[in-house]
Image (cartoon, rainbow over all chains, first blue to last red; front, side, top):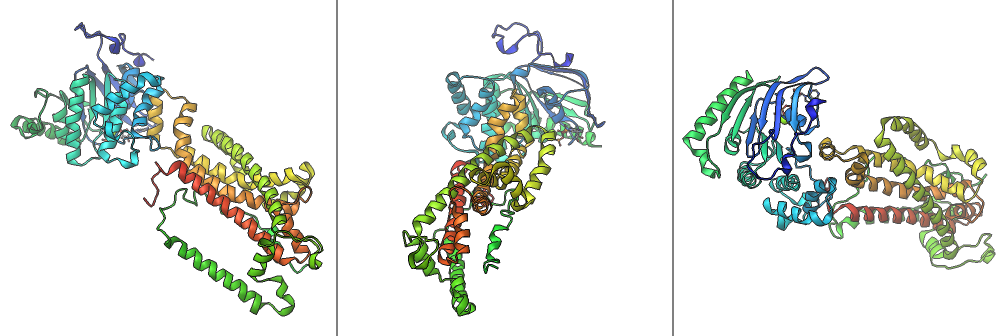
Length: 265
Length: 302
Ligand SMILES: Nc1ncnc2c1ncn2[C@@H]1O[C@H](COP(=O)(O)OP(=O)(O)OP(=O)(O)O)[C@@H](O)[C@H]1O
Ligand SMILES: [Mg+2]
């Protein structure tokens, strides 16, 4: 199927030569999705995300956001249009941390590397780095049942980070967390984004989270999901916690909120 | 007619109907010190009291020998090493050494039966978890096996395998199989979809998923099944002894022999001994299960 072709150029192997990219890290063109039962989930989605971009989707519940991420990752197959991405270089963070309860934090982080056949020797430094990036190094011997919700999410992030993917998909990763943990994780995610320079596609129901994290925010309509608004977020990185109380931040949030209310009608 | 007809019902009890999935939490609540022994202690005291009451009050003098008092049982079957045949008119003899020999023989039958049941059970549950048609093909027969009293299979088993060791082992297998299959299967297929998707995303094969995801996730329920089956395999060894009476005598056959010779002290002693084996095995597997999973498993009581 043509829609499943990986990028013609392996972006992960591309050195920082500054050469113009041949393709986007992630690209949907005119993509539609109708489930076998007739549910029309997505309609004519065109969207590309490059490395160094962090795009967030907001939209009414059931409009197809998760479906779009599932298509990108290969868990679901679209019915029309194209999806181009290197499936070997995707990090996917679910709303549930999906940690294996019988593995320690460290062993959980090793899981994906293990599945990709990374040998124990070259794995250790990668795992160390991931754990340090999310601040879990000193908790690496704990089991998930000993962790708070925020720590579980960090472990889940670290697990996805191990293979240094070019594309990161986030499906409401912080939706189950309290406000303070969520904001702290937002700060850390931005730090990761700046450090790793991946292409991020993020889903959230929180407008503040969307604006705070993203280079670009897309608003989707109710099902079948279409992109009905597209905002560039002008704030420079690194973003301080306090920009949330900026007038410009409030104005942009207001616009998105207005569009969303329209989408719900 | 034997006066033991009622108690002879031991042989006809369809053992182990308590095999529902996950009846026994593999990981119990942490002990609350001595308090957890108070309940069982009280029940045990009541039971012993009732036993003495039966002996002294309920039984007429002529029938008192049918229910010897507990201290006689302890004395003759546990604290006396060997009572040679003919001692004091005893037709069978008895004593701890003989009962231990019987118990050892039954333990071997139970252990072998359990081991084979575990191997078959794990393999069958794995196959069932991989293909719905395998589950559909086998499950009705497992349920039937589980629902039929072993007594019904005796002529068939005897004709096919003879009336000694291997038939007794087979009885154990038949009794112990279902809880292992049912609990293992339940554990293997209860893994949430998100975990499977995570594995699929990274190209894990079915075998990799079984190894890294489903077996570990199923450990608590596998041990629940093992614990039930281990207890049942002891029951199977005792029951099998009643039907398949050739070869080395197990504890069940001793019970039966003592019963037929009115050696009631020895008979009760042997019954208690087989019960102790069942309890020991049940507790042992409980402890083993806790060792394996408690460091990560979140109990319902946690
Ligand atoms: N396997 C499926 N078969 C049929 N319909 C499905 C399937 N999976 C999802 N849907 C439907 O597709 C639509 C989009 O679902 P999706 O999960 O992508 O929504 P969402 O935007 O992520 O919603 P939420 O914000 O609540 O997470 C929903 O109406 C859902 O019921
Ligand atoms: Mg969703």
